[in-house]
Length: 284
Length: 284
Image (cartoon, rainbow over all chains, first blue to last red):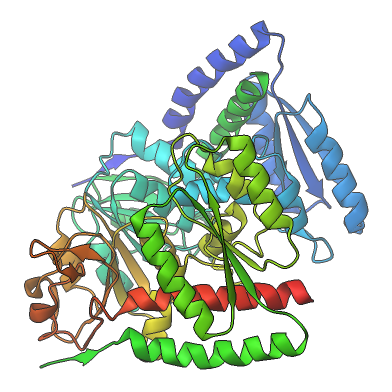
C-alpha cells in the first residue's frame, strides 16, 4: 500500500488564506503587522531561515525587520537593544535566533520579553502555557507546525497511541503536550530508549524529531501508521533528508510527510499566524 | 511473589536527617527558615494539609506561619496581602492553597511570586523549568515525592518503560518530565486512553495519579513491575485508598507503595526541603 503524502505546500496554502484575511482586517484598522527578528552574528543557518521567513511574511503582507547585532556585543548592550524592540509599539512579534553566543545570557531575555510578542515561545510564561495545555500563548513554531499538518490532513488523534521520538524543548516536548491536549496517549522516546523499534511499532501515529537521518526504518513502522517527519538532516550524499527512511516507510504508512516539502515550510506559516495573533491582541 | 513495600516513613526519615543538618547550618548563620502558608477561607482539605505540614515543619525546625484571608477578599486586597508576604525578607517559602475562590485571579499571583520562594511550583518560571528538565527550580511537591520514593528504594529508571496514569499539572505532567529527565521512556495515559490495561502491562514502572479508587487492578500489571500509587481517594466503605488495588497488585509487583503510608506523607518532606533550599539561596 502506498500512503497519502502529507505535503507542506497544501497546509501552507490553507493557512495563507486565513492569515491574509486577518492581515487585511488589521490593515483596515490601520495596523501593519510587524515581526522583528533579532540576530546576533551571521550564522549561515540563521540567514537561511531568515530568507525563508522573509518570503513567507511578504507573501501574507507582514513586514519583517531584522535587528542585527555584533557577535561580541556585551550583555548590557544586548539587553538594551532587545528592550527597545520589545517596547516598540510598532513591533508585534519578536523572534530571537538561538543559541546565543556563550557570552550572552538567554535567561535574562526570556524573562524580559513581552509574552504576547514572544512568537516562538522563549518566555517562561508561554512555555508554562504549552506545558499546561493552555492554547492562549504562543507554542514553539515547529511543534505547532506538526499539529497544523496533522489537523489539515484530518488525522484523528483522540485516544490514539502516538510515539514522539526526540525530547527537545523546540519540538519533542511541546509536541507531546499538544498531542496530549488532543487526548492522544503519548509515548516519549529518545536516545536512551531501549526498544525504539517496539515503541514505534505500537504507535498509530509517529512524530520523528530526533535529528538523525533515516533513523526510522520500515521495520519500525506498523502497516497503516501515520508518520510525521520533523527531521532536517543532510545525508551522506549531501542531500537534505528527514529522520524517516521515506522510500521504505512510505510503502507501509497510511500517511507520511516528506523532507523536504513537509513540516519544515509550515513552520514559518505558524510564525506568521503568531505575529497576526499578537497584533490582534495588542490592538485590543 | 509478594513484592517490596515502599513505605513513605522510611523516605521521610532519610529526608529528615538531611533537612535537619541543613536547618542546623542555616541557624548557625542566624537564619530561621520560614514557610508562610496563604489560605483563603477554611476548606477542610486545606486545614488537614496544614496540620500535616505544621507537624512536619516543626519536626525539622522550620517555622510555619499561616496567612489566613477571608473568602470574600477583593483581588486588590488579596494581591496586597500576597505581596507583603512575598516581599518579607524573613519568609523563605510561600505556599498558596488552590484552587482559589472563583472571584480571585490566580494568574496575577503566579506571575508575582518570587520564583525562589515559590516552593510548590505555581510560578511560570518554575513550571517552565520542570518542563525543560532544569532542576534549579521548585517542582510540584507531590510529583517530586514520587521521584524521592523511587530514588530511595533504588528503582532504576534509565531506559525503562514507565507509564504515568493521569495528566494533571500537580502530578502527572511534571512527574512525566522528571522521569524523562532520568532517561525513562514515558507513556502518558489518561481518561481518554483507549487501552489503559495494555499501556500499563507493557510498563516496567507504573505511576498511578488518576484519582480513581482501585482503578489499577492486578490484571493490568506485569509480573515484577514497580508501582507507585499517588492516588488519595475514599472508597465505598469510607476508607482511605489509592488508585491501585493494593491487595491484588502487591502479589505481582516487585515493589509497591501503599495508601495510606506511601507517597502522600513524603510530599510535606519535599515541601520542607524546598523551604530549606530557598533559605539557602536567599542567604547568598
